[in-house]
Every structure is written in structure tokens, then in C-alpha cells.
Amino acid sequence: MKERIEAALDKIRPALQVDGGGVELVEVTPDGVVKVRLTGACGGCPMSQMTLKMGVEKAIKTEVAEVKEVVAV
Image 1 (tube, rainbow, N blue to C red):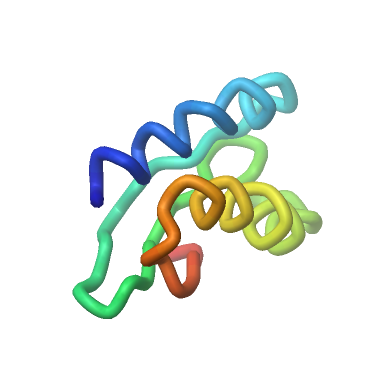
Image 2 (cartoon, helix red, strand yellow):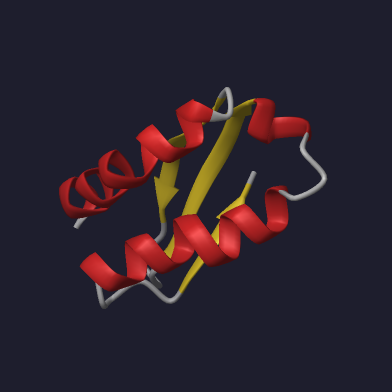
């Protein structure tokens, strides 16, 4: 499952990099929670929660149905 999540993140990374940000996978819990770290400009952006839920989480859930939630750490 981790490889499929990384593949989904690879699809969204270019959009984040355009704005000077990024995302890295930190952990996947057994209960389907994906922990990510927003980096660069995304780390301190006031819109980061929207980016996380509407961008990153949506992209991951589209590719990996077993994922329940994506949270930033």
C-alpha cells in the first residue's frame, strides 16, 4: 500500500512544487491513516489545510481506496 500512496503523491507533487512546496510520506498506520509532512512553502501556508484535504487526501484516496484519512504531522 505504501508504494501506491507514494505513486499518488508523485502525481500531485508537481502542482505543489510550482508554488514552492512539497509533501513527504511519514507513516501509514495499520488502520488506514496516512501521515504526511507538507514542506517548503506549503509548510507555513494558511491554505495548507485545504491543500491537504482537497488536494493530497483526494489524490491518495482516488488511487488507494483503503486509506481512511490523510493528516499532516
